[in-house]
Length: 158
Image (cartoon, rainbow, N blue to C red; front, top):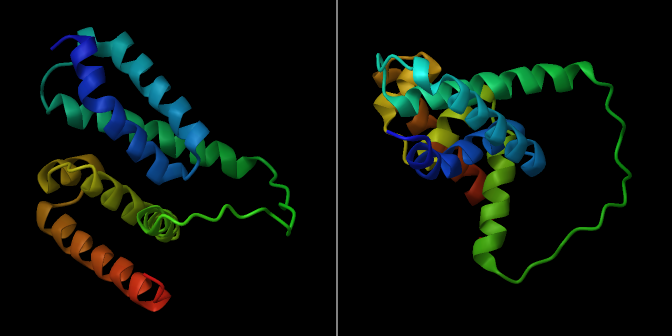
């Protein structure tokens, strides 16, 4: 498989994974680029012991984890309390924003799992990426869906 094909097949999914880790669009774009730079540089050494998608997801996850560690070391400044909220009339967009916020509130492993699941990554591959058994991933996906459903129902506005 050539790099252009790999990039076109996986770049959107990798961006979504990075976004689910970091909840920051700019950082997600940066880490997506860094992931594919690493893929480009190491494609010749890929040994096909696993699916190429699993290899790329693992690279992205590792980069995201390093970014989270680096961000934790940097002193954060409080945001002003008066932040302009963008209102939208589009119900679907409101639901999407609410869902992203709910996912951002999940623990790290659950964010990773649901992010991959929402990108239609098969549960078997998710299990390989996060290092859990397939049955454990299946249970976690079910429980995460239940958590998110409860949050949507508790919100009541949708």
